[in-house]
Length: 295
Image (cartoon, rainbow, N blue to C red; front, side):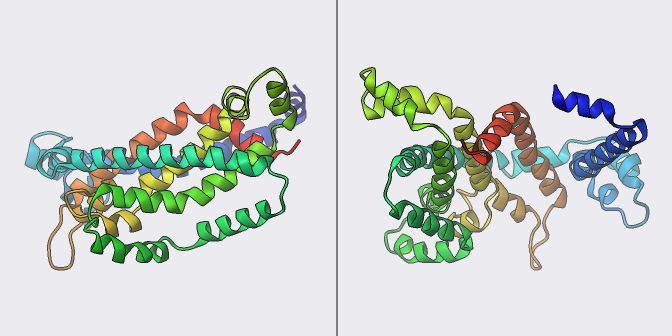
């Protein structure tokens, strides 16, 4: 109500300027994805035309080669010929495993640290923050030797283990902050009513901080979903996730790749992120707000 009254007091030119800046920002932010989405239905000669950039819009070569203004050859080549669906399935397995494991241990550990009165809690969180700030490659190098010795390299569990190790400090830190914002009186009231400590945690605390769990889970999802360094180093070609698979479409200096397969795969990998953020936007905003305000 107060925000609406303040907005009504703004002069019309200022409101028009703010709306114009917002629209401009949205156009600039959405343009790369929309341009890539449009280009994914063209042939390489049009989308990457050096003679005339407008060929990406009109598609003259696309009409000559395919008989139409749009073509799905890029998606067919990526998903069918090169089995991008297998990389999508591997990504789903890795992401679900990482998010489930990270949130399970993160909620239990965060609740324990938030309710602990010992001073070592601060130092545990500092150490966790240091590990989170370290480059992923430095952490991966420590796992390579045992994975090779135990013949575990190349399989999905190896990437899941390392991604959980990288992600766990972040989830622990973030969830501890959320739990600290929940009054201890809720725990005590539940235990007075006959609940055990774990029942109070499961039946009373978790429902209250559910937006924080969703927010943390989304960040864990993005870490595992968008990772390239860990999955590229630890997974073989058969078990590749989507991001390394997209890079393989580009080829190397020795082998020619198919760029349009990569363009179509990029659109396929980006679209679920938009849907996920739009679906959980309310929980994300409330979760970030709850984690930022104490009391």
